[in-house]
Image (cartoon, rainbow, N blue to C red; front, side, top):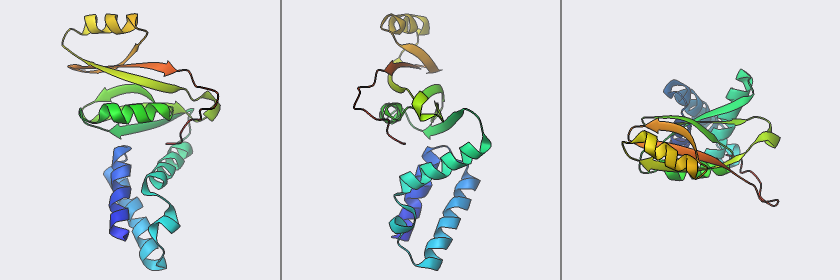
Length: 164
């Protein structure tokens, strides 16, 4: 049970772009606590994904600044699913790179905007951008031949931003 939790925690921290040395420190700290206390991981820390998010957010907030930043690790096969989930949680894509989606959102929850994303594949970048702008999409990244676009989602009154 502990090993599975630690693997999940490590995977979540990796997905958020945490440096491997910091991941090692966090996982070692959690493992030490669990082995010494005898507590179950969920009772002590909650779900691995939630705990990873809390640790990353606490670290970023201590660094200061108006924006919370997150690097999501992704491949061409899963990045759109990751972006759709992140966009619902208010993460705005600011840039892309190989296996990385760089996102940001304001610390002030009242300023968080939900986003939707689209990806077009092709080598004629200017034509693709012109077509997407005509459909009210804004360019937000390019990793040839992938072109990424975003647009804000107007929230429904009963909708709430997911905390991820």
